[in-house]
Image 1 (cartoon, rainbow, N blue to C red):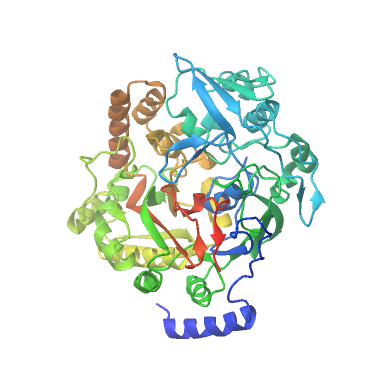
Image 2: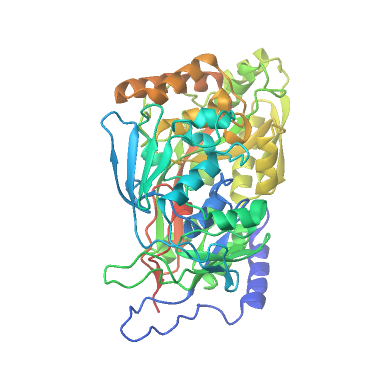
Length: 552
């Protein structure tokens, strides 16, 4: 491990040189009669560039953190994970569970300008139900090739549209300008929750068609902030949407902030140092070595809570040495001391993973038969797998000091049973691309909930239908697992669904396409003068900043 004293000293010199004179952002004096919460730029240090600012193609939390500020869905999830109205102010569901009718919020407009005041193609017009019809058709159009379109495969006509048998999505129609109707092929209880996912936002047809694939670099939505600038591997800058529809309890227009700047700094020591100097309102990741210091220094502005998510190492079952070698995959799972890792490297800030589903998730099985720490069993299985003298593996992980420390700790644990694990570090975008293309046998990955249902973990991440970018990065395939997770999607009885998912998860644990490591906690460290923030149970990446302000 590198000596921290030199790193911190170097960081201090760099920070003073770059950020001298900007220890706290200026906040404009509010106009007479207005709230005193207005003004200022919220600056956050993030570990990596967002791969996508086009919500139709975004599948990761780095992108989502920005997208939640630019775009909006029909419904949203509050800080406790409960479904709440968003651009739909209300909805009804037919008795058979097939037809959803949404009453749309009035006064919602697309961004009128972006990028230094440049007019958008839509001109800042009002959103209507026809915009939602166009958007859902655009997302599910096979030519669009949206990685998350299949989340909507229960909508009537989805399959015919995918197969080119029709030129539109039959189950989505506008009743009038303010009423949207969506009809499903079968009742799917998590459907409303799926609509809270950040791909299913309303899009302006004019701007999407103007930019095409370049919409990724010129995003336009309805959110509280609008796009200004994206300098690759350096920063993403957003500014206030002056025409945003929300107001606070006193009738003051939101957002309070003048803008948000996401600054890419992939050195966690540098992030922490700059934060302590006042150069950021928040940092994406509080590195473990500074955890107790942060608790002491910032007791009222360090937020932390359990998160529905799982940190794992994937083993691609179509590539050597994991192909047709369940015993090797099981040996790795028996070889690691999860609680020891969490205590040593994460300051106890996680829960050991027995399987895929995190605690708090519907279907979580306290009695799941997982893998205890058993080095002797691991050695036995390693020999039976054909490696009595050990095996050499390469783990690919994305750039992060935290990921590196976890990998190094597990490297030492695996070494005890004869596994020599070499570490390969690449940036997040390249890592994700190569994993999706099935080029990497052994890789770090994590998954946090998109919608609070086992379907989002088991079906999305491990069903045969979802190889590659859809989520099944290990290319795991098991007919009985596929049957159970498919049938659970259409089963209306909650207890039957629970049983199906628990049986399916046990199959995955037995087959071991993952090295199950831990379930996340989420956190956010803020300067004490940041007010109005709530840490979402889904993770800090999903936080909204429309009612956050800087208190001078």
